[in-house]
Length: 306
Image 1 (cartoon, rainbow, N blue to C red):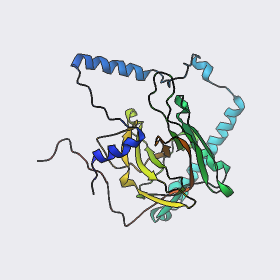
Image 2: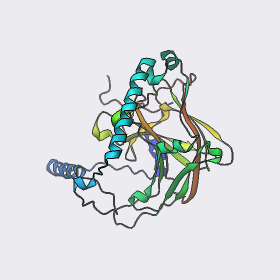
Image 3: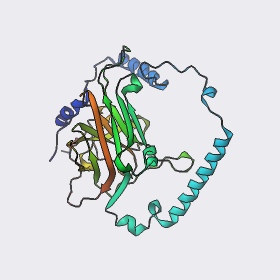
Image 4: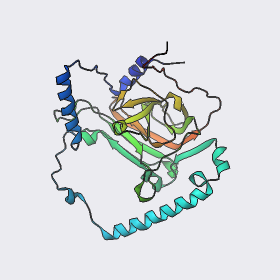
């Protein structure tokens, strides 16, 4: 069943999304606005409330010969493993196993080293007051994201909205810091085992794009936790994810590009100040044969067929 974009925008409004209509400007004035906006984005972006970095470019580089040698050894070892895995099969597994795979656990938390694959951030980056932390759960078998949400904006005269906390997986890197992506094209459903406190979260999937102006594009869907002491198994089909950029839902929607997935994240921004927590056991994938939907939202054609 197709869902209109008006319904999506009303649902997305809980996270403070504002849809603005474009201004009707004369051609000369519009051209000057585009040039001024382009010049602003070409300079280094500085978050409101932070002092400018006045150091010279060579002062920002940290030279360490011992770390350089260790880095070369590390990357040569990774390059060797890549060559060996190529002879075995995709991702170092036999081809028959890769073709018949129906489920996969992509992330699980079974020790302190598993937390190094994740990054926690909050509105403190823009001067906010929210706090977010991450640690291992009971018996070191889960990841516990906890903290305090505060929607009071910073008093810098520029920021109007605040109040968010985010947990995001790091970009996987191959040898010599080459980007490594996940291939989820064999699956159609995201499977997670979580335990929350009743708050609504946003699940974000980031993929590799072809153009630089698409670097802020993410695919999102809502995650409603029940709360209480019991675990919750959540299955979200990838056909339900919708495209957004910088907090705004895009008019042109399309299916998630599952062949080059960069990271996955969880965002809280329901404007309900107070403590929160989200415990994650694992994040996996599955191929649900009973799910045949390709895309849940309506698509528009720019040149409709007559």
